[in-house]
Length: 413
Image (cartoon, rainbow, N blue to C red; front, side):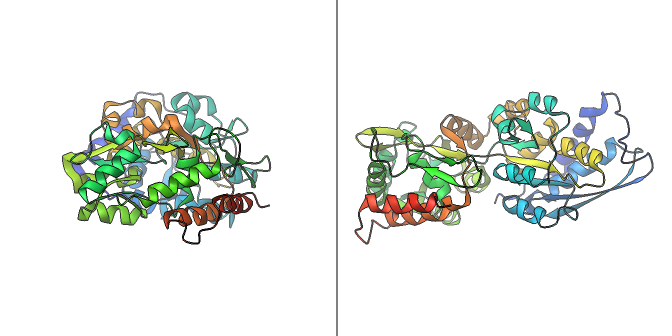
C-alpha cells in the first residue's frame, strides 16, 4: 500500500480549511441522538494506512461541532475488502461508521447493515455518476462515495518508451526485450485478467440472484472467440519482454531496474515516483493484438464508500461524521495525504488532482472500465486458467477445453 506523506504545517492548514468549509453555513440543529453537552461515542473503521488522515478529520469535525456534544471518536483499523464479513458477524457491536469496497454494498443493504441515505439528492449532485452508481442498490443510495480510484492502468518508464509506444502492448514488449527489461502484469489475479476479455464482446457478470455469475468467455461465435483471447495471452507470455508478477514483485522490479512498465493502481504511485523520478509515466492500458485486430485492454473499476451502521446508537451523528469524511474538503485532503482519487466532482476536477499522472491515467482508462460486479466463484477458475497461459500451457491441453473448464467453475451454483 502507499506510504504516508504527512506534512505537519500542511495538515494544520487543511484542518483550518475543513472547519472553514462549513463555517459560513448556518449551524444545523443538534441531532436528536445527542443533546448539547451529552456524550456521543462513535467507532470508525478504516484502512490502517488512513489512521493519520482520519484523526485529522476527527479533529476538524469535533472543532466544528464543539459545544453540541462531547464526542468520543474511536478509530479501529479494518481492511475495506473484508469489512462486510467483519460487520455482519456482529452488526450491533460493529463500527458506527466504516469504509468498505463498493462490491459489498448490495450484501450489506440486503442484510440490514445499511439504511438508505437520507440526504441522497445532495450526495448524488456532489459526486461522480460512476461513484453514485457504485454506492446504490436498485437506484437507492445506501452509502457515501469516498473514492473513485479502485482500478488499474499502465505505469511506464519514459526513458524506455515514447507516448506512441505505450499505446500498443506488442510495441512495449519489443522495446522491453531490446532493453533486456520487463513489462509485467499480475495474471495470478482474475481482477487483472479481465483486461483481456472486457472489450471483446465476451461477457461476465452477476445473475439476478446477485450471487452467481454468467460468463461467455469460452464463446465460439462472434468476431473474437475465447480461444482467440487465450492464444493472444500465450503469445504475450512467450515474449522475453513479459512476465506475470504480483503487485509486490512489480514494485521490487521497479526499484531494482528490471521492470520498466507494469499494470497497477494509484496505491503504488508514490513508490513508483520515488524509483523513477521524472521518468515516471502513466497512461491508460494499451491495446493488444487479438484475432487480427487491436483490442483496447479493459479494466475493472471500483470505489471506496463510507457506510453508516443501521444499528448505530447515534445514527444522526454517525451520518454527520460520514458526510464530513466524504466532503469535498475531506476528499481533497485524502488525495493530498494518500494519493487517492476523489469521488466528489469538484475535488476530482481540481487542478491539484488533475496534476497527478496516476489519477489522470485512471480517468483516461475509465472510458474502458466496468464496475466489478462478480460473484465469489469468479476468482479461482480465472486465476487457474490465466496461470496456465502465463506458464505457456505446459500440459498442452486444448485451449477450448481449458476455457470451458474455467467457465464451468465461474458459473457454478
